[in-house]
Figure 1: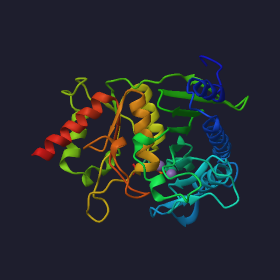
Figure 2: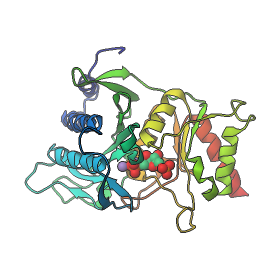
Figure 3: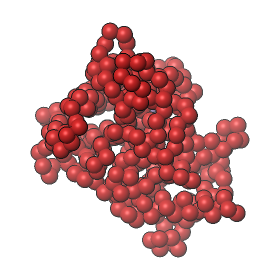
Length: 339
Ligand code: AHG
Ligand code: MN
Ligand code: MN
């Protein structure tokens, strides 16, 4: 541990540097941190208590819901709606906007989250995470919350980050002043600054994609992956393939080592080319983190952070990581579009 700075101290330091900060935002993050510690505790007990397996329900995306997905979702909704700092929330697991129940205090922020990312890894002890994204409401305070309060482009985020439940539990976040990583010291129950000012290497050496779907890809996507496997690419040797299947874990590894995470469109369902990852609770927060760490995020055409969301569960193709690798992907798609 390089310095024994807790995440709360780090937040306060940041708050002092910003005369606009009121302390309310710090309270919001502190509440989020407590929720994640509770989820982390439960994740660590998985296997000992009856939290593995499916609930029997199907979520808004038609995916089977795992018990831990639902548990994490419940904890976050319950605690965060009582934080007094939010006017609305949205979760990957809920079809509609989550309003703050009448009678509870509200605030000027909006929270969007993926309560448990990497569901397919829950039951097999492989790293999973929680992703969060915070915006300031657009509508005037005291007025009813509107869909536009949630449908903001990623560049408007005031904070984004994730908790990674891996070999240790980490929190990585940005408020637009770099990316900072903290590791949970289970002995004292605090997140301590372990990765100050993270920077993604400009040139990566790892590519991460579910290559099992190659048969469902379009030709430009095949060309992109051929590039990373060739001996004539930027590093003159094939990149290593690493794919966990948890965005948080794959992104985190590539941010530290350098590399690119890709989830392109594929035509596995109904023969139409469709993306899988969600703009608001997955792509936008990761894009802000990537840019703040000196990396890049695109949907193959433009900047992820510039996409104006049309609905809560909008999906986008995602290419995120080291700047040179993401630029190359964009160039290959551009070339293919121009024919
Ligand atoms: P979630 O568990 O929140 O539904 O997200 C799963 C996402 C993401 O974490 C991961 O990168 C991707 O789905 C894996 O999908 P495949 O199994 O299709 O590769
Ligand atoms: Mn997810
Ligand atoms: Mn999820």
